[in-house]
Length: 293
Image 1 (cartoon, rainbow, N blue to C red):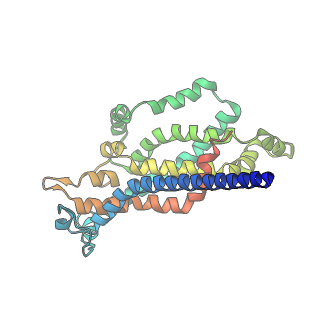
Image 2 (image 1 turned 180 degrees about the vertical axis):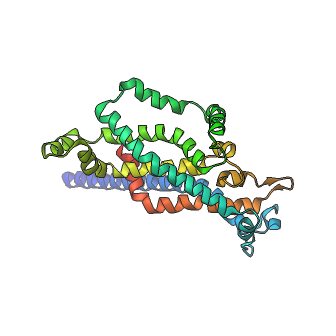
Image 3 (image 1 turned 120 degrees about the vertical axis):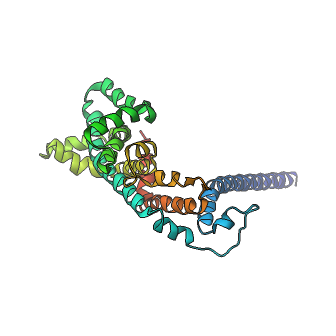
């Protein structure tokens, strides 16, 4: 009877321990989801507030305390295109970001591959490429402006694309070099044994494997070009300005045109949202691919 009593006590103790562990797990999950929800709201609420303001009239946009329920209007969007010609700036941003990315990514892929496989130039050249990223843009913009003015590249999209490549290429080379270093060299050697040339091995074997990483680099390049302000402000004119410059110009003598500014900001972040939805799977895989050894 004592043995049965002891067994019952042990069983009760095990049951209590199991319930205690289960309760701790539920509490841990609750706090985890609570923190994730909190940080998500901190990130999303300003964006949602900008979208809300873009559909408000100027009177409602400046009201304090703010009004949360009102009849939405497209007045800000219509005025943005009719008065500010926002489509021109949007087109300029799209052309420069896409062109810079399409030109920079293949060059950076070949450069990163050369650094990763053949150690071209050794560490001095690699750190020299990285060193160009250590200079702030304000240091580079004045000599670039003088040089571009002599070459007739100011107030042109060609000049802006070339300027964007100066800071995009070093960044992309280092990003893609990390991806190529994770590819086993035996895969290329097997392709060489089968008669493939080094270039054929790169495009047929290495490139498809690193495609997620290259896609991630392309997305980061596009975002950097799309959001860039300083070079676009100095090197462009009224007909070649980009979205960030046009949004900054909405601070007038009457104050900030907050309704149109919110509408322009909403349209400005729209490409980023569409790109993230389209390449989300490849982007996550690519960003984690180069971090795993």
